[in-house]
Amino acid sequence: MLSPDTALQFFIAAIILGLAPGPDIIFVLTQSAVHGARAGLATTLGLISGLFFHTALVALGVAVIFQTSALAFTLLKVAGAAYLLYLAWLSFRAGSVRAPGQAAAFTGCMALYRRGVIMNITNPKVSLFFLAFLPQFASPAHGSVTAQILQLGLLFMLATLLVFGSTALLAGRLASRFNQSPRAQIFLNRLAACVFCALAVMLLFTGHA
Image (tube, rainbow, N blue to C red; front, side):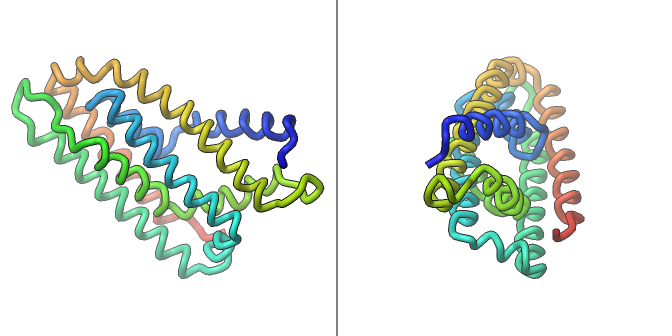
């Protein structure tokens, strides 16, 4: 069982890490600004579901495979980069097919939820990060390390929900403005496409620790 002090320290660290720019928060931001807060919250829930996957891997020790096997790491890294490029293509296409004055096409909350899940679980850097980060706050003196890892993962998910959920709600207020301006829609979607392409290249060139 985690001590209150450890849980608080970890939660504060998780909040700070959640605020750092990255593909996840950028995805939430762009979807919220174009489609509204509901879209951003659906994306956030998908990303959090992916975090549960990585937490389970670390708790069960499976994440060590990605740390020790260059082949497993490379395969998942390529899959993650390919999915980021797919998201870039969707963003670029979304910015070019709408007629002037037409509202942004919305694929649905479930589709965004699935994208969030896939985007998160195909990033091996998350598993390696959790493998390095979570055990630092676990101690055999406080009981089962596996149980503590799961508790830490849940706290990280809660921190992510607060940060990304707030981002979705704030950016969602811009949705009506973007839907009134086709140029703004195109600019935001194409900017997101460029960012996703850059992140895909960065992921491909990430070294195996």
